[in-house]
Amino acid sequence: MKFKLTSLEKKWVLYDVGNSAFTMMVSTIFPIYFNFLAGNAGISDVDYLAYWGYATSICTLLVAILGPTLGAVADTKNFKKTIFCIAMGVGVFGCILLGFLSSWIWFLGVFVLAKTGYSASLVFYDAMLTDVTEPERMDTVSSHGYAWGYIGSCIPFVACLGIVLGGGSLGMDMQTSMILAFLITALWWLFSSVPLLRSYRQRYFAEAGEHVVRNSFQRLGRTFAELVKQKQIFVFLLAFFFYIDGVYTVIDMATAYGQALGLDSTGLLLALLVTQIVAFPSVLIFSRIIKNVSPEKIITICIAAYFCIAVYAYWLDSQLDFWILAVLVGMFQGTIQALSRSYFAKIIPAEKSGEYFGIYDICGKGASVLGTALVSFLSQVTGSINIGVSALSVMFLIGLVLFQFSARLNRQAAKEQGKK
View 1 (cartoon, helix red, strand yellow):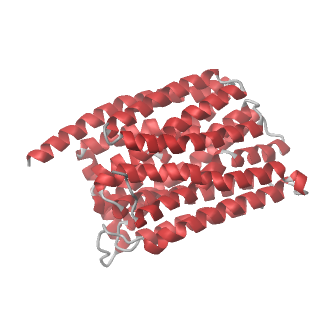
View 2 (tube, one colour):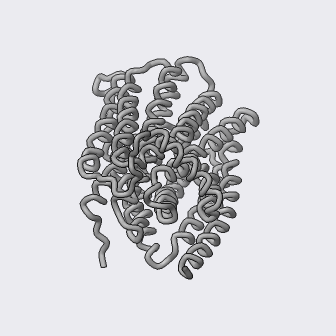
View 3 (tube, rainbow, N blue to C red):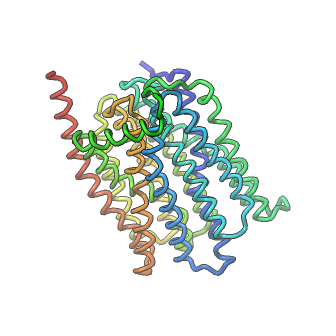
């Protein structure tokens, strides 16, 4: 029987289509424009990559600090949508502002603001999954979110790419082209969120009480205490910390990596567009396979594939190598993100989804502090960008081992629950 999304599920998926346009810009045009600004300021290629990595690390560190706290507040009745709107608004405003900046240091500063708002909005967006669908539908709904997000982001990206690459023939300088590109991305993101904001209702929540903030902190404290006792969740988060660290570092630094290797900007952008196009059918194919194969097995396959991709990056030195890398990443990127999100949503208490997804985000985007800092540090110390990127293979290997352990613990917990 063909799987059909409900109206609310479609609106939830649509936000993925909107925010993915910002992700695509961050992965492609942002670092190229920053390279242009940094080059004008006389900054070397190695330092350019390092500064970009450090800025990304600061973003993820901020979200790691804010995520659980705001997530706990968001679990309070009628608070999740409000905090989600604030975070999204910060990201949209920052995205628009970036186009008007010509100083590389100011660009990095506002980038941190916009990326932090974007990442924080995803904490609450992911937590909404328990409100918009049922546990047995989560794997497929989550996969549709990533799939349509990848293909949907190509629409504004192609428009932005045409403006940035063809602006000169239209009489526009670089900054004018960038203003339009950032504006298109921000508006696409904003308007794609409207249907969800109009229809979303928080089904699972904690009652507000008299002291919302104090009660939220108390709940968060209890959640951290409970987390250590719930071994299947705790070990999964450790595994997720390591393997998703590498995934997000690849997303955040792919274009910067290619630029630092001296590869052609147009070729890099087109290769990353191919990543999005390949990711769309790949996620949907895996979402069908999951009906007959367990999520644990598919996540394992994806982690192993990323390990091989990181090893391959050590020898990358040509445009063709980068295109091969882009296709391989596209095959597994969306699936590992989608199934990790739904897998986690199914093993946590629904009424505490904001708190738990705040912690999830620490172990997710927060973890890429380690990945981007590792790549930046090793690149500077060794003078080799390839060594810095290939070091991510260690993160995937550790994540793979821990995930196997967490899957075993989850099966044991399920059996014990079934006996009660």
